[in-house]
Image (cartoon, rainbow, N blue to C red; front, side):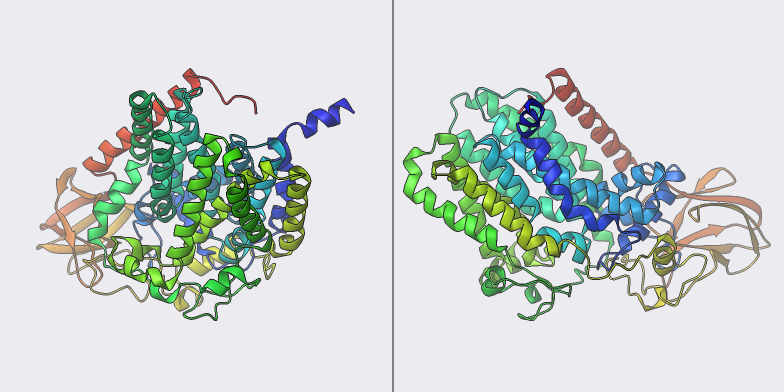
Length: 556
């Protein structure tokens, strides 16, 4: 009996245990019909780059009919780092992606529990943690969209918020929370840069509200600034080149945000579907906030007005922040906010205004804090979460268990050594074409071609770095059919030589003089990126030092 009591006293452990049913479908062999199934092929490409010693991976060798692509220079890399770790432990690419999905569920529940525990009881925190998992949008992300970046970001959001709370608590503002906050913030940026761009203003608001509640303003302000600085510095090796190099790519947001505003009715009317987001109110996917989520929201808002004076200052701050953040998120999903979307820099790259469901999913569980003043609060909270699980567990499964393995996705998305019939039907819509390319390749081309003379490939490292022997009686132009991009270098007879973009695909061109020569073309970090890599690693070591030096998490 004592063991059972001890087990039930560990709220974080209960959060982990009760969140696991949301992951049951991940144990069915093979991958399912998620819309973003290309992530399996992208993990394959990361593995190719890593095993060739490209750290951090940026340019992958096989996409775009073998012309390669600076994929991880622009696409959030952290979920694929985690996936690569699972792959190196022996899992296939499909199972590695599913392992990332799986881990995100209990980790996000535990982190939300720890965050809510700062404001309310163990049972209300547990209820909020489980509602955070059993929300319709979480099921959509997992089993309809397969949106790996957003899926991982759900685990980082509560840690960032918890770090802000700890850093602005005058009884607990240890430097270890600078480290935790920095790692969490950088993880969010590396997990899904769009989510980070959305969330950071709300996090700043939380820090601002808490800051004016405290007395030791100078010391705590310094620690808040240090947290954000370290977090952005750790991830700077990714986001700085992504911004700087974006001018080298053609502008294309793929989807027009104006076509993807959910209606107010769609947010509050029960619905579920495995289709796509389309213009108008005829979407196949669900934007429903969740019945229990809406009940918690309504009860919470009523409790705020009825019991406002009974809440302590910390609870009042978090509730004001949650209420304001929820209203802003709902507004940003409504077409009436289109004037902001049209005029605010970078917002069009969100592509889907309904992405603000990430914020509502995170915010609504905070309203369980209000239940502290309600009679029989623990029983009511447990009943609501039980209903949330019962009502939503059926959505935590894919429409189709396709059972597809690694070979299917490699054949579908990797056009090397040749493009499959399935690949030929793809537009590679997520890949913006480099500006130096006049057109996108439409078929497989030889890896090298030349206007005269001969060339023999002596060595080809994973279809990326290449070593060639050439012979010609006059000047020759050698085409290396990879997209020209910062980081490519060529050495002719061990001396660096100039490369330039050729037509029509923006491929690498090298001018070679008459005679016999040995040419090496390889991809590496530019001086700026090397500097940012050093800054990032140094900042990460500082953050880890602060965590270790000033102790681990206190028992909750």
